[in-house]
Every structure is written in structure tokens, then in C-alpha cells.
Length: 148
Image (cartoon, rainbow, N blue to C red; front, side, top):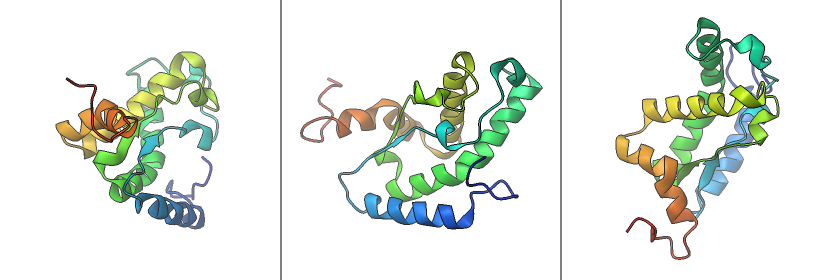
């Protein structure tokens, strides 16, 4: 996968440069981050016919590999922005850029994001990640006026 060392972790210099810029963005309290675009930053995934069925050993292995790569980036974003300024980006149709095919790429992206938030966020923070933060970020006054 792009920007990945032999140990599966992000290549140190690329990660450091990216983290520096993310730190600058996170210092602005009105900036949110949308978690999307991951598959376009990775080497191409196998075509859907080679990924196996949902829940198969092949699919599970692929998702573990994706999580190994993505967790370094996602943990950094969570540390810098916190759960109240992160939001899910469906990443469609961009997830098809190297995503392995239209029939599976979105599901792979959702499973990767969902697995991460299930492991690292509270129930309240997960609700904010999936919708609450976007409602706040895109409202004019920063208040969630839609959940009434």
C-alpha cells in the first residue's frame, strides 16, 4: 500500500509530514475532518472476485490488512481532532479508485470505518461520528438544529 513500510505501518517521513499539516488544521477549533478517501491512497485492492464473500476468510484477511494500514492514520486523526470533530465520509464513488469494484468497495470502506469507531469510540461518540458532527459542522451557527 502506498506510503507503507515493510512493517505495514505508514512510511515515517510521509506520515510525519501529513501529521504536521493535520496538527495545524486541528488547532483551528472550527475545523472538522471527514474520514474518507482512504482507498484512493492505497495500492489497488484485489478485484471483487478475489476478495471472497462477506465473512469469508479471504474477506476477513483483507479487512485486517486494511485496518492495519488505516489505524495509524485514523488514530492520529482521533488524537488530533477528537471524536467531536470527526465525521464519516461515504467516500462514494471515490472508494472505487483502487477499491476493488463497485459491488464491494463501499462495503469495505464502511466496515473499515465502523470497525475503527467500534474499537475506539464510546456509543455517544459513534453517533456523533456517523451523523451528529456533520449536523453541527454544516449548520450555520454550529448548533445541531436538525435533531428536534
